Image (tube, rainbow, N blue to C red; front, top):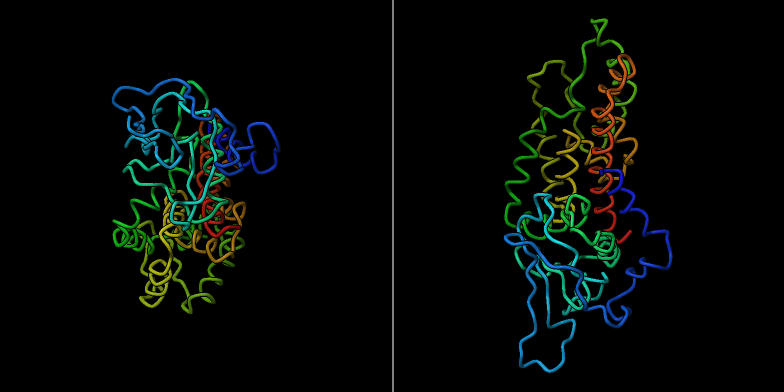
Length: 317
């Protein structure tokens, strides 16, 4: 399923025509786009605000649709009820919104989903367009979930998000080094020196403090100046940037790797190689467990790729 989600995320950028006309604006949508496909569930129904009886003409601005809270948990939240997914300018001209037929898409908190760039709005519209008629599956919509996190959770818990990231910073993956005096770990140690040492040098150059490398599971403590420099970067990040960094850090068990991506020092493939360095060494030695390692690799690729795509589309790249 993870690989299917990745395909759906990338495909609309190159395929022209057909269903990918969603990449236009709401004004370009075909007539009759307000018809529904199926209904919602019971407790997790998708709530639609219908126009009042006194309204003579229904416009796209007069209706909306909000996702249930369970959308963020990954469960199926009801059948597809719309025909087309399009994008349009926000009412105040500041940002972009996604339209499901004539309905303005809202977050689980029932606030308008106002996105910073047209490119991000188009990508999220693509996620909605590729939902099947038998159910809306949030686990295939990583960009939509990241947008909800950035627009709702981060502004309210920004200090907590940063504190949580900094709490784990001293035990960062790139600071932990396998012992060189064991036959079982010498191979990993050599790969870490080859692949991770350049990142440590980048940290020294970028932040002005040399990281401390340790070989204990209990971790070490980095220079206070380095920790403050990293925290300053997080504090200056926008809500969308912080949501992306937080998502990558959770998947990578590292804050340095997301920051290297954020500062354009690392690409997605390089980052995944660093994250999986030790486990890939074990796979090379003992073999891959089907249904285990391969699923983990696919899931990591989706989590990291979607966060990076979200970050870049936020910038309008």
